[in-house]
Length: 234
Ligand SMILES: [Fe+2]
Ligand SMILES: [Fe+2]
Image (cartoon, rainbow, N blue to C red; front, top):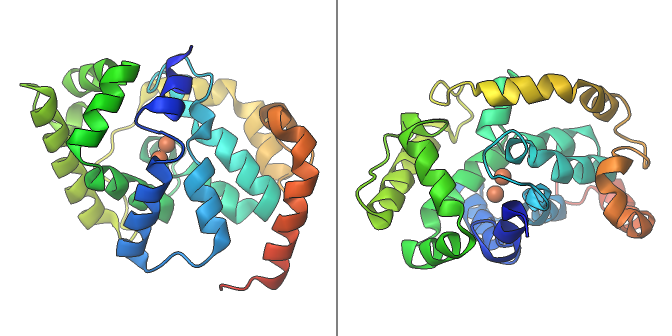
């Protein structure tokens, strides 16, 4: 089983666990998330890790696209960008602002206690990749403590707490470095990207990304239309 799939099933991005931390973080930051579209984004934003051979390599870095495609197909371009830019690295590399989902997503990690997080990432093996990149790579600027897993996680949480404090009002992110791996892959994905932005309201959009749920998409879309039509919470 690929590590990305393991992460969603049993690890850092556990599909029934992580979304609740994001929701709680959102509540703390911006008030209770009444808009149902927010809840959909909490639950789908990391599902793109499924099938990825790494967490923070060229493939893992692209994980926001799947959830973004789904959100865009259901609720339009604004929600596509909202979901896509929950990754501060992706937004940095695309020269666009991170979204509020990014802030809640980072604060969610601050709220995820080590006694829960560490056994999960040890079980899936993700921790090796995360710690390695904290030592030399993408997460180097976090200056994480490498003495033990517990100290490493505490230092990551401390960095993220500071990052959230600095950026919760959507101030420009000058902390996150540009990741050259992403730039390379973004170029390769240019065709997909232009397709996504140009045709976002089309149900066929992102069909290659969403083909797994294609049979259900029409039904899901019906509910999405109702939510969008009444726009109850804005
Ligand atoms: Fe993510
Ligand atoms: Fe997340």
